[in-house]
Length: 98
Image (cartoon, rainbow, N blue to C red; front, side, top):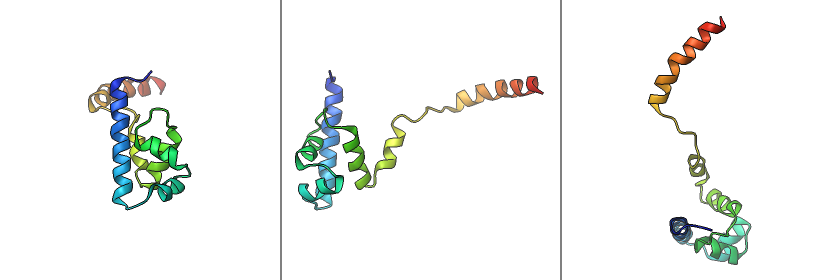
């Protein structure tokens, strides 16, 4: 169901989550309570379990002050080239509408 690459990324994210918690010197029980999850759920997140709910990840990122980072995941792709190509087309459409 999940590729090896996906599993590796989840494992890395779990390791980073654990490192962030430890850097704040927070025990699992207190950190889990702040997230609104059980300690076993926090362990699953920290182990990179693919079955962990995305909502729990978002709660963790919010507590860590990293929630805005998520917005970049599927942000619309914008390229200056596409904008340059599209601008003359938009001007032509505007002229036709007048």
